Image (cartoon, rainbow over all chains, first blue to last red; front, side, top):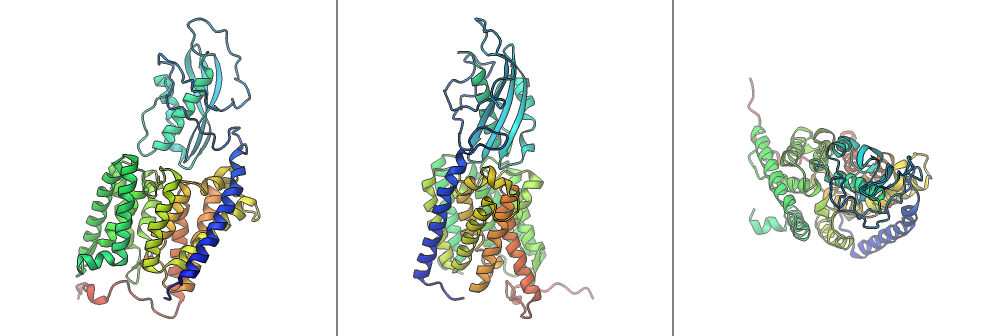
Length: 174
Length: 286
């Protein structure tokens, strides 16, 4: 086995660096392309970590994040009249949670300050969806975006929690 | 072999780099769960390796390879992985090394084989935290420096370069739709992801520290180039078609398969991994 000469190592490394840099630059455009079935950009991360919960005093986090627009463009049910004690508008809201391993989009239905339905509308994690299929039921049970961490599925669990928190932040009144 | 001499050997070199990665990633992230997993993985790998060597009645039992395999497994599996998943993945890796062998050489890279199976069997989640997949992008040069050191020591630059070129170009070709492979995964953000942490960290760690494993990769320059190209192309196609995180392993196993077929159909007998004198013959039954 002949040892590769230093100049060739430098030359090849530089060539690969150029290819990588060109592709990196070219791929930037993809970050802002709408994804099929997901109007949110791929990298539009949801910085919510407060994990809003209906059972919480605070209600949803209102961090003013670039939250995902509802998948249908508007809540599927028109927001009900806000009463003084009401914390959330009725309707179906779409939220997105993402991290370096992908993103999850959920549709959360709220009726009379209760989460009545949670659905994973888009699963774009680099892991298996089967890891988090039970989480929507857990949200309904706990009435909170905080769920138990699924062992070995930390990244998917976090993205799911963020997605639910994002949806609830949109439902929040005020 | 004296410890000082061993540490300067290719295996010693890889071990030091892996331990450095483990220390840096744990210290910077303030998460020592990965270090705990490393102990579990190395323990499991060493126990299974020694057990297999005893069954095979080998004279020389020095589980340095198992130590490295265990470390690689623990650096790739999520630091939050349950201990039994880590132990089982390391065990499967070592078993593959002993059970799937051709002329005393492992057919497939043990760590890649174990990690690949850990996904469907144990639902293991892989984060490549040891390649700084969870840390800021400026940790990438650390992977490069460590990887270059290892690659230089074992003289596998042709293989690493051919992998990198083919992998990057294949991703571009598939993303651009030049080949009608319907690589939906790439067009829905996969191409963007592949070039950024943690995926680019994974590709670099993989190319320089796993693909270069001497027992399961070729030595000659021409063979190295073909091997790297097969691994790069297969990995990119699998990523383009299915996404996920196991594409690199499948690429490597495709390269390993090419190696096996090359040995099988070449007239020249392959050199055994260990001298025959080191392997105690089985007791004759008659």
